[in-house]
Image (tube, rainbow, N blue to C red; front, side):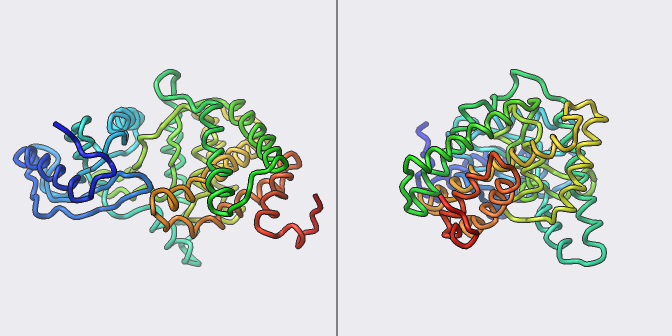
Length: 361
């Protein structure tokens, strides 16, 4: 069977998905005429919701059909779903899968996301902070359960080459393509020295199971019959990497920002609970906080390039509005630590702020 590539028309892939679902319709009581788009993301994956049931004896509800054109990671999704489930983390259950075609049928974690709940909580003056704190602590507890099951040689390593490859998206796509700036010798020097510092910090940390996209957009509010928060999505890119990465990505997100007091409350909560769980977090909270900040900066540098690539290469412009949030994150961290200040100056120069803040080069 010749499969359409990820560049084929939407209708071609959708017809393939519908044909595949017909083969599983009887087993899962699928109502194929209810198939509707559920969501999409920054990759070529798409998700559809339809009526059906997970197994014999279960009541009819909704399921999720996944269109993940090769080389999207269906095998990795199934592997990591099993690891997360074994760790006591609530994830979709894989009901049917065709690895070669890139098609899956999984259980539905619903439509109530952490992003929506936390955005609503931020707008509430009384119960909002308490609600946000509860949700974040639930997420951090789930993260600790996942990390506590870590072992080597199970997931791909988030090694030096991986870290550097991610950050190189920034000079190529943010500086070169988006800003139209030549990466001259001076700029390259600042980038190289900054990247080396961030890589060294990341590699010096204890290495654990790492989800990479552990953020409110990928977390779901769990309802009955499974009340465990959160439900976790989009985990097929999991690796073995620095212990602070997922904590940083949760609190310094593309779609939500928190004040420093709330962030610190969450970081301290995680640090204390992680120590009790036997995770190898740094015993000095000040050093642990620095590790989070530098790890977050690595991610933010990557995201600046990634969002521009998604826009210019993949024609998905809706992430571009969040670039200022990430330059803000990056500048705040880089200004706080002397070894990173040349990078802060570079950001200001790129945005024409250098004269305003009195920098000289």
